[in-house]
Image: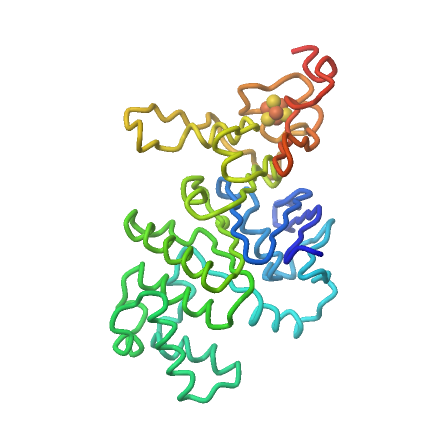
Length: 330
Ligand code: SF4
Ligand code: MG
């Protein structure tokens, strides 16, 4: 009985003109069929890179897979050739992005773009048109007959994102990656799009990996969360674990910077300092320079992953059971 997706100790680096930088370090993550999983963290923490690695969309000339494995349905995807991978991307996995405008072709109508994908699945023109209409209806686009003939710039940002979701659904994926899908939208539209994703997830029984810098967005949608910082997974657990008993100081910082609708006068504290430059990674814990709880050991040694409860882990020396070893000297 295996996971739909299982990422095991994945480290990815990029060759750049400044040298090699490590974008993810020993990332492990699983997604079960039909499950909603969130990945949260600041920009550049490796969350998009992880998703792109699964879909093999990283630039082949600069990305280096330095360690780890990615299993899809029990098969190591690194053993798949390009045509097998294309089938996987077309049928099993799909992705939507923050900016639907860049993912849509500005010179093709919405209808043509949706139908283009469908016709790759050997549908006639007539069938493709009918299917496109039903997909647009399904994602809540009003007067779909008219929308088919419109161009992306004639639609609002929210409608463009709905169109991209329709295109992603057209292959009936088993897993949808949604990478900051609502970041470019206003708050009302954001809530509607999240609601739509939730509905589609349930109706299609597909797994969704929602990537966001906003823990509030993740909480609305996901069952489990992975918190990433500077290329590593620092905490993982169910949404309740993360909100009710956050363990890692970085997660606590993320929570403290979330607005609380019940306490509008709450002072948002945020996290002092900046994420490390990936070229100059701290040698011990990557959060050490910003951590309010840092101890001496944190500067020299990367913390191991400790299990707090079943399914709730944190990579932080604070949870070392041999307290005198880790907490001995400040
Ligand atoms: Fe802070 Fe140390 Fe924990 Fe890192 S290992 S988060 S520096 S207490
Ligand atoms: Mg990103």
